[in-house]
Amino acid sequence: MAITREEVWRVAALARLRLAPEEAERLAGDLDHILEAFARLSALDTRAVEPTAHVEDFGALLRPDSVENPPAGDEPLTNAPARDGRFFRVPKILE
Amino acid sequence: MTALHELSLREAAARVRRRETSSVELVRAALARIAAVEPAVGAFLTVTEAEALAAAEAIDRRVAAGEDPGPLGGVPVGIKDMICTAGIRTTAGSRILERFVPSYDATVTARLKRAGAVVVGKLNCDEFAMGSSTENSALGTTRNPWDGSRVPGGSSGGSGAAVAAGECHAALGTDTGGSVRLPAAFCGVVGLKPTYGRVSRYGVIAYASSLDQVGPLARDVADAALVLEAIAGHDAADSTASPRPVPSYSAVLEQGVRGLRLGLPREYFVEGMQPEVEAGVRAAVRELERLGAVVEPVSLPHTEYAIATYYLIATAEASSNLARYDGIRYGLRIPADSLGAMYETSRAAGFGTEVKRRIMLGTYALSAGYYDAYYLKAQQVRTLIRRDFEQAFQHCEALVTPVAPTTAFRLGEKVADPLTMYLSDIFTISVNLAGLPGLVVPCGFDTAGLPIGLQVIGRPFDEETVLRLGAAYERATEWHRRRPGI
Image (cartoon, rainbow over all chains, first blue to last red; front, side, top):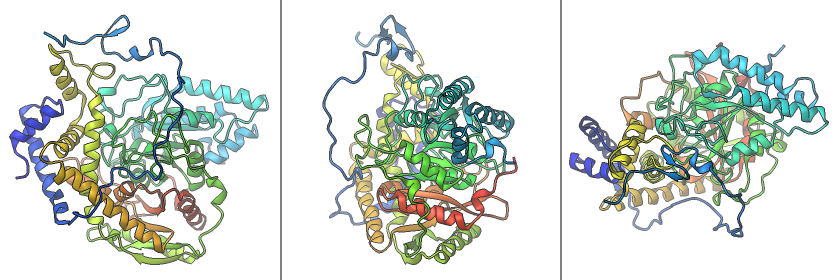
């Protein structure tokens, strides 16, 4: 057993996902099954191997920090789930 | 006479340029074809009829005024719904973005338009490009045009199906672990995943940022080359887009393959493969030999670790990328009393089963106590997989392999077992981990009449060689000319 039900709840909280009990149950089984199959990686000796985070072959590309876009106006708010004038509406974050 | 919707992209663009056919006629033909076959195929999530006709009229006016409408001038294309289109909803196949309308074009969208292409609609895909069959789309079912009981492959299934069914002359897909190449193989069309960094991802909804790449699906290699020329190259808005100059891919297609050294990785011909797939690929390899290529066996010894490596790295990156869907500034919001509850309920309602599974797997692999064993380990094995390719490419210019162990499987066949579905990617994911270009060309059919694909893998930024190989193979064979009877 690679992953317990308690761990599924812990990870769901970290990922900001509210799971139904039967969903958590199913995910525990799925993840366990998947991680068991992936355990084969541990058989490889990688102590002397550098990790690869990305495969770009060029360094950081820099450009002048100049303003390219005109002010966006109302645009960023057009997809807002809830708004109040020029603001995004959200539930109270401070009690 | 060939119907307008069946023309190659090149031929359609040439006719517009010569004023033999108007862009409006091409767009009307595509829209008529879409109306006729969509009930059976379901490739599109959005058809942009009014916008397409307006764009076509503008192209026709430019042609009438004696202007060059561009290399793709006036030709109908489709775009995977992972790629932003200004003013046209872009959903990623997800409930959480079902009503999202971007205010800007992705760089690839803007470049297609600049080259004269006319966007006729947005194409279905697995939710957030996570899947191998397009069955994970929350917004619709796409069927394989060769057999409606089969999947089109994924995650760019709508792109593959639409091009195969004649609904557009080419399409854009995204490929994180095989998502352009698998649908190309399953639908019998050409698909290219360019080298990591060859094409800008600005405005492309992120799944796994160290692997994601945009690529064309088309009906032949020359059309795919033309689309790549239009979209490739540096972009000030994406620092991962390489500053290397973009060669003229179309210019090398006639060069032939004589003397090219091709590697045949022994790990890509495995027990349990559908025998007809192996036979089709081996016959294609013999054909390339007959054309003058020199084929030799090579080994990619870490292939058996690729699935685990990919699904740990991709899910880790996905868990981070998808953290942005919080119901605050855009996307689905389920109202709740507190901010935390709103995040959790919005994400629970907006994401589908596979997306949640991958977010969970990735969050777990990155979490305290597991990072070294899973995520770091996977990054180290990624290095070993890259080295396998570097060694193989010391002896040869390209590798030839199958695309998938089987032809298109049945709808519903693999949805219950995520691991079985993941195994569909076994021959495509290493290419993403190593950041290489991979081309798929049709190379036969099985006894059920389903297409078989050949994959050609190249050195980094050597799209020219893989396209040259694909074009030479096409000139010698007829597979790419077959169309589904839909």
